[in-house]
Length: 135
Image (cartoon, rainbow, N blue to C red; front, side, top):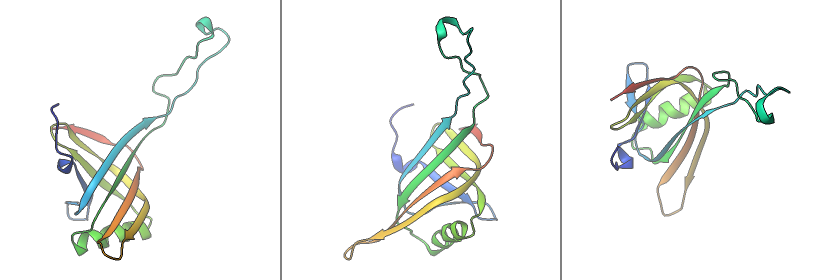
């Protein structure tokens, strides 16, 4: 995959009608993690740790920040956070694919300087099975 522009990575949320792009994001990060299950016992070769394949818990996290560019995005994100609601989200990675599934907003922060714009940061955690569709 050749170098790409970071601004082309899109974060979209299901607004009840379809997926809408969260406007004004300047930075975004998607990370995946998988827990391990230790299956080591006294007969493990050389006393090396053995892991049980497919037994760990997997999860994904999304983080992003920027400025809200429209009232609808701002209101939807705020509503989802305060309602403690889980919604389907999409992360579109150009020339790679789309990761889609349920996420919950786990942090929402606002900041601003007296001579600058209001910014926000948010974090999401996966809340169920995710799918991947290649582009």
